[in-house]
Image 1 (cartoon, rainbow, N blue to C red):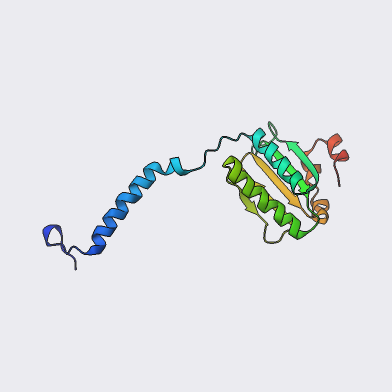
Image 2: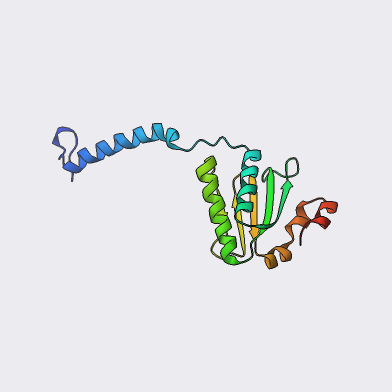
Length: 154
């Protein structure tokens, strides 16, 4: 049983732990300086998302303005990929580009299946579907005004 005060057995681990604890405190104080700056507002994010989807040959890209309609985000983007492989690749590249270029961390759901991948930046929600799955769920009809939903790709 270890002692206290001067009777305490000092081992090499005690020194290492104290140095590690000091380093951890210093890291916590400076952790914010290491995080990427997120200067990208929702309009900047939307612009980069749309260009990324176009670069990766996503099809039937629809953007929906959610400002004033929902608290889940400012914009929703819905698009299609031709296969599960393309859907997954579009989502992976989009997430990586947003992180690298804008410092935006994303949450990604459904990437393992590749039928419907959701990418959430906090301000913009992106749905990448296989065409059959997109047709089944018809998100555009839920979120677009009726006259725009009728004109949206199906």
